[in-house]
Length: 166
Image 1 (cartoon, rainbow, N blue to C red):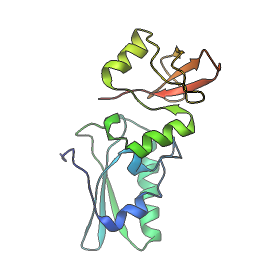
Image 2 (cartoon, rainbow, N blue to C red; image 1 turned 60 degrees about the vertical axis):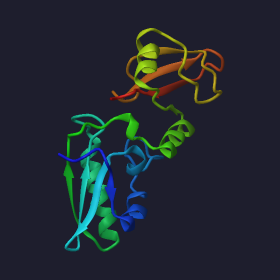
Image 3 (spheres, rainbow, N blue to C red; image 1 turned 180 degrees about the horizontal axis):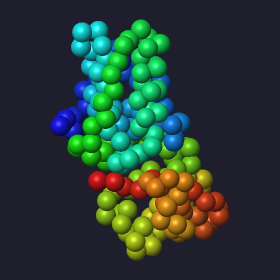
């Protein structure tokens, strides 16, 4: 088991920042918070990643992309999938949340606000196009299981909301 603290060797950060999340290509895997450790031991980079949810189909692609990026920079590497502690939307960086919104996906709210929006119909999810909170839930599931579909009542645009996972 690894701690919730992230340990990434300074020289690996620029490399890993270039590896994007395959489902949300405007976010790096660092911004999504899936990289838990990336250290160099005996000239081999050892990376631990945590899926955004168990069974996430993107993890194999992410692992392959990490190894390819490190290989381009002359590193051999191993990638290990770790499930504990479980990933949480709290691990998405501030920069990542901004990139989500710019891409058209509303960033996750806190856990209680998330429940109010998804279960009670409270109008607190901001439209990514016009910023209005006059939005309504269209479907509990959006383009992926970790998102819900909302629509803005003001500008009429549909958009995904990234559900809070704790």
